[in-house]
Amino acid sequence: MLWSPAMNKPVTPGELRAAPAACWVAGLPQAIDAVAAAAPASHGFLRRQWFAAAVATYGGAAETLVVMQGDTPIAALPVVSMGPAPLRAVAVPGCYWPFRSFPAAHGAAPFDALVLALGQRARALRIGPVYDGDPALGGLLGAARARGWVALSRDIARSYLLDIAAESAGGAWPRTSTLKKNRFHEKHLASHGVPDWRFLDGAALATGGFDALAEVEEKSWIAERTDGRDAKFTARGHGAFWRG
Image (tube, rainbow, N blue to C red; front, side, top):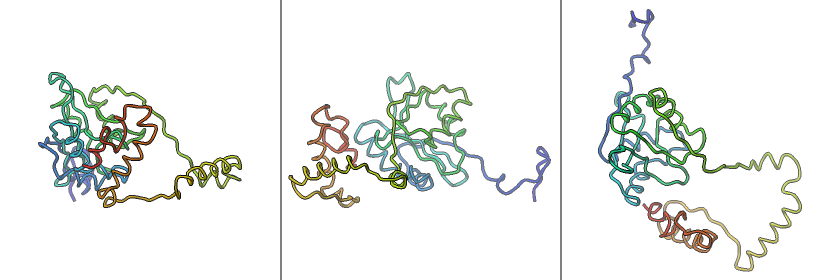
């Protein structure tokens, strides 16, 4: 057993762990995948290829701020430069949907080391959009504000969750009028062919699935009422990113 004179108490094995240390790495290292695998399930998709596809599609030269605890990567913040060089502003690459964040290992505390290293290279970081309560952003904000950074946020939308189980348990649901309207729409759809649905896995997406999704978007209100730049799977939209 070790004793800490400064704290006048025994030192536990957990306290002997190496303090988080951050370093900049050119490009997009494989460490990103290791961090994503240890991140909350909601952030598991933030793998190296997610960021590589963004850089290939939208441009920029990536570098990654990796936070290590001993030999284990616990956070990875890929960035690309944005705006005039004198601003020293960087942004997290990615796509707006489902959200644009970065991976940090669940239960880790890498953010003070991350912010300290980030401040040596950049004066501003753009991240998002993300959902309220994003664990990576929450830890980053706390550490950044403690070191004098200022956060400029913008609310862009609200998300709604319909708890079908709770609604069904509360009585007759959907309402009779809603069921009647649903039957009308189903009948209308059936006039164009038998209604059907499929779930596409990676293999199906790679063998024509993305093209099918793009065809749906091209026939939807997105193509009719907008310039199509925000479509997810079309050539005018973000199709190249998702294929990447």
